[in-house]
Each structure stands twice: as C-alpha cells, then as structure tokens.
Amino acid sequence: MNTPEPPQHQPRNPLHGLTLEAIIVALQEEYGWAGLDERIPLRCFAFEPSVKSSLKFLRRTPWARAKVESLYLFMLRERARQGQG
View 1 (spheres, rainbow, N blue to C red):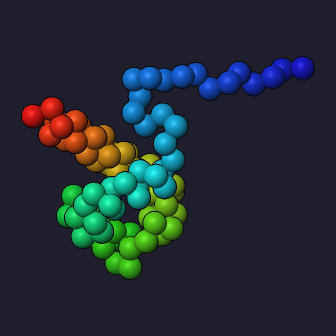
View 2: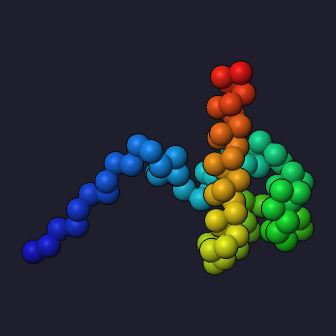
C-alpha cells in the first residue's frame, strides 16, 4: 500500500502553509478594500467586497491569484524593510 509523503518543509517560501483566506485578510487589514482595488483593480475588491467573494473569484482565476500573492510578498518585504530602517 502506498502512503503519501508528508509535505516538505519550505523555510524559504513565505507563502508555504498560508491559506488564500489568510493572505486576503492580511492585505485587507493592511490596505483596506479601496487600497486593494487601487493596487490590483479587480471587481471583487471594488464592488461589494468581501473575503468570501474574493476567495471565490481568486480560486477560479489563477492570474488574479498570482497578483494577490505578489502583493502579499511585496507587503512582507516592505514591513521587513521598514523594521530594519
């Protein structure tokens, strides 16, 4: 019987172990819905925004999810840069 291997530990991947919901919540707390719409103009951030509607859209749209993940990584870099300066 084949048992699946446990997921590998990825210490250099800041997205490892994070859910898409956690990323959206963190970005919304940092920038607000209006700020998210300014940075990534998506209908799910502009018109009646919610975490649930954003998750539904981003799970079906890989290019938009990539942009959101990229913005999250940018936010982490900015926080680290400001903390060191």
